[in-house]
Length: 205
Image (tube, rainbow, N blue to C red; front, side, top):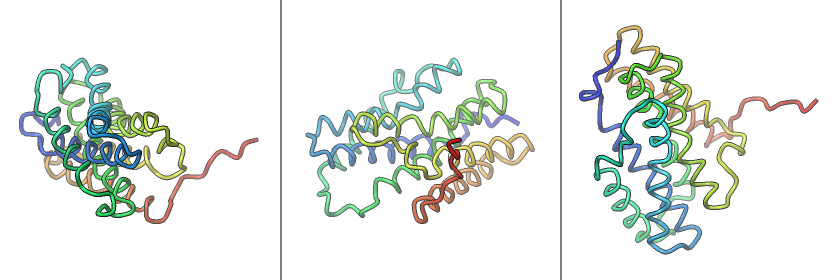
C-alpha cells in the first residue's frame, strides 16, 4: 500500500528541513562563522540527503522546483544565528539532529515508495535522506562525522524508515505508520544521545 504523496503528511518534509537547517546553522555559529556561512551550512544540511534521494529515485530535485525549502532554510538559519549560543541547551545540536533524522527517514522512504521503488530500497532511500545531510555538515565543519562517534545513528534512521515501510506494506494508514516510524527513530536516537548506546564494533582481528 503506497501512501499518496499529496496526502502523505507534508509536515514531515518541512519539519525535517527546519530542524536540519537549525542544526547546520548552530554548527556554523559554534565555528564563529558569519550569517552567510550559517545560511550555507543550513542549506547543505537540510537539502543534502533529499537531493541525493531524488537523484536516485528519478524525482525532480525538490528544492530546485520549489523555493519554499530554500526560504525556510535561510529563515531558520538567520534566526538560529541571531540567538546567542548561551541560550541554546548544551546538546541542542544533537537533539535537533535526532528530530530531523526521524522525520526525514520516514518522509524519504515514503517518497521513494510513491515513485515505485521497491520496499527495501525505499527504506534505504529513507536512510540516505536522513543521514547524508548531517554527514555533509560535520565534514564541512571539520569535526568528526556523526557516523564515527559509535552511537546509534544510521540504526535509528533504519528503524524509522523500516517500520514505516513495513507498516505501509501491511496496509496500515500512512499517518499512523508515519507517526510510528518517527517515534521509533527518535526514541532510538534519543536513547543513544542520552546513554551513548551503540552496536558492538568490529573486534579488529
